[in-house]
Image 1: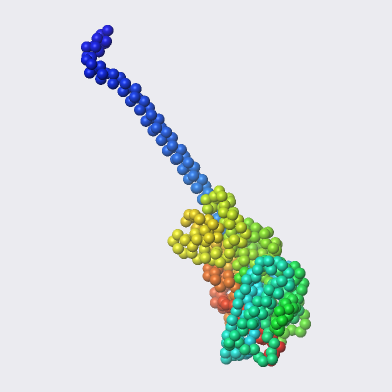
Image 2: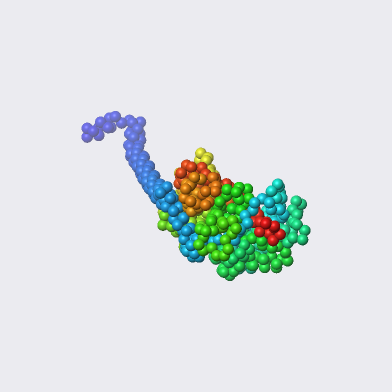
Length: 536
């Protein structure tokens, strides 16, 4: 009662109203406080969830980055070309050269084909001569006007033609009819400054850059195709006869004066300007090498020896293989998916047709196994064979911008990968560097193997009794091919490896000269030096 009376005694109408209002507000305040607490708890839970997700993403990102760097480290190690391995490869190349010269089939790897080129150009050739250079996915037709020792090459013109992919695996007739048609069109545009001798049939040199067993300077039997060609009805046939028949079907009067390999053409072109040229190497779509050998060192030579005592050997070195070659998972993939699995190991590791594809295979593996480029969805273009050409690899490799913008552009344009981090672009750049350096150093080992064979690996003072080593103070290597010409860092790596493998004196005596379009011009020069109208 006391409490109740105290409440009444304090209560006038205003107070009562006040009490009523206060009485209603207490539970409302408590309800608002509960909602606020629940809202705060919800916010805390959301923040916690975000942090957990962020932590998981961070952990995933860190794991992916660690996996990528592990894969990169493993690939770098598998691709390594230390000095001792390069020397092992050079020695293996030399050994196979000896075997291939002993007898036909003496080496399962190097054909070591003697050519019938006896007259290397010397500069006194005159007249108008043509050449067709078939060595890859493109071929060239060209003409040169020669003016003798005083004028040398007066004028030259050429046209490059892409070969439709279907013709690379079609029939012999389809391929040579296509080439003959383009040749006829080119001859028809013969303009001012080009003049054939009156009454002379036009003559051309045919650079056919595939393994051919030559039976004369202007005839040869195709052994097998390389560089993506697979025309079965041409194997075992005379290539010159097939070409001349195609020319005849077009109604033209053009005589094939010399059948040569593009590498032989490059050697001839180099010798035309520098008599110290002893070997040539093609590094383009495909690769090959040839060199000048003493005929006495060729036991399988048949017939009368050349007057010069020397013979040009077409090595067909693209098929070189050795347990010392640093092959990786990417090389295995490229080989298995090629038109000639098991063949051309060396070519598939150093030439322009394959370097880009090796890079693509590595990038695809990194994307699949370590979420390179973000994942989990992989761009279909990245899984498309040969979608990355080697010219792109060269551009990626030469990107020196702070944020590798050219790398980003190529990834977007070629693979449709639109967003990349700097670290991802750096990894792509590193992969290109690893593959290009490996290819260039392997090519260098091949060159040193040839120098070993002709006694030029110890410099001009070599005392091994070599006829060739005693004659010359310099050894010029004539180089041709788009890969070598346009991929600057490849050139740098190759030269550095040669210097690394040779003594200082020997390295200084080896001169590497780019013979731009040497195979084409050299082939025309060989047509001139083997012309039926030439007086020797």
